[in-house]
Amino acid sequence: MLNIVLFGPPGAGKGTQSERLIGRYNLVHLSTGDIFRANIKGETELGLLAKSYMDKGNLVPDEVTINMLKSEVSKHENAKGFIFDGFPRTNAQAEALDAFLASIHSGITMMVGLEVAENELRERLKKRAEVSGRPDDANPEVIRNRISVYNSETAPVKDYYEKQGKYVAVDGIGSIDDITNRLYAAIDTI
Ligand code: ADP
Image 1 (cartoon, protein in one colour):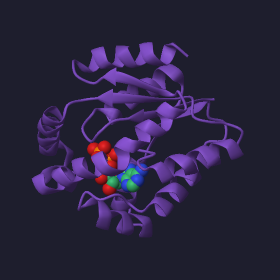
Image 2 (cartoon, protein in one colour):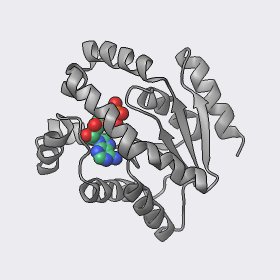
Image 3 (tube, protein in one colour):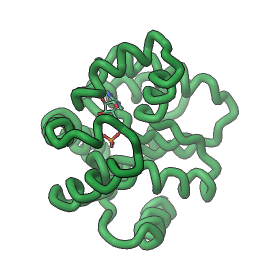
Image 4 (cartoon, protein in one colour):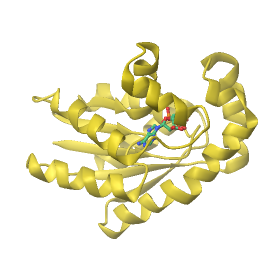
């Protein structure tokens, strides 16, 4: 299996680039943010719970997120591999993902990190707010919190994969096509 963690701060372009990668490598795209939003729309119990955290820019608790992720992976028995987008977001999630993939005789192939400076991220999120309809994009206070949660909880996940020799950085500034080509090049090295 080719299992890629697409990593990067809010607004780095993970969703946009994931859509391109799945076609080229025949992978299943699992975005925890998208799955939570679908649950919110469907007014499920999970959605209701997730919303209370997401609206403030906080992380949904690990146990809830990990269980949801496992159940999503299990829905795709014949997958050639996955792009994990927005997951893992904490070291505990990374450890749980490793254990789960090992239990199905698989593992993470690599983490590709989209690197974008913070001022550029703020600009992109402000623009996205005009079209996304996402309440967590519309409120500057919530954006501030998401970036701060990213720095404290999520940034350490990069070290987790770096220690395993699996982290590759990709410059996330430039045209969407340029960034896609950089990602292809990074992935094609394996
Ligand atoms: P972005 O990358 O722009 O912040 P996402 O769509 O990935 O957007 O995530 C939106 C929100 O969903 C996060 O702020 C968080 O509340 C919740 N979320 C998504 N993925 C996770 C995760 N792996 N663990 C906990 N919460 C998550």
